[in-house]
Length: 278
Image 1: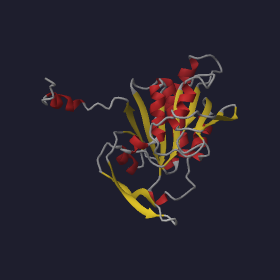
Image 2 (image 1 turned 45 degrees about the horizontal axis):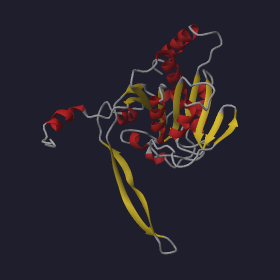
Image 3 (image 1 turned 180 degrees about the vertical axis):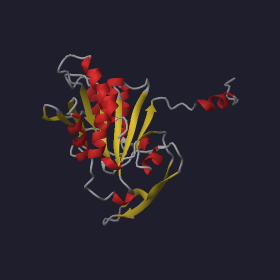
Image 4 (image 1 turned 135 degrees about the horizontal axis):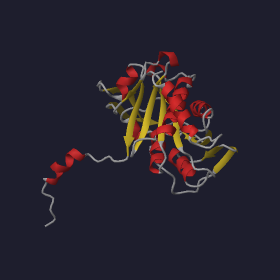
């Protein structure tokens, strides 16, 4: 893989500046829940370079976005000294990890490995990306990482997370060595192929995903109406430089995201509107 030697070298140089035997601390969470194999594949790989603490939801929390719990108390169940289950959202888990639940403040937050893509507009809905966003808001360098399988493989339960976990470790080392640019957290998508078939790393922008959702009305055996939101699989606007385009080329996509959603180009136009209250 490109840059892997650089990663190893820079982390070695960085560790030389720290006390002998020092190990950084990484917080790992997800939105697929505590039993997700992607979560444990990432944590196991990161343990080779850092002390890892897992704080994860007790069940799947996909598509909960950045919601957090305000209307009821949260319960934390410790599985062992480094793993805790929260009956809340991914954002709740990050708040636990950054606001005093752990005795040691993490130096990096990694959310994943998500089972499925978080590309383009998916980032609005994703609990995985929201966890990284919450880590960023809490002042931590933060990464969301997802494993992207073709639509034809989505029903396959045997996802191979090894390549994504390996890249997660290399990226963690790079971030611990260099930090991240101000105001930035990362959204990473890894193709579901063996390590040797990956064709590199691309720094990308978000692609445009087109959804074809419908409101499907049905009736249960008691005669009561209920609804599903579903439809055909999403499609993409093909454009170079996007996260989706990188995945088509079997490249790992890294998209820098940020907090400010302001559309600055629209400010002059809106300033010209006659919105005076006089």
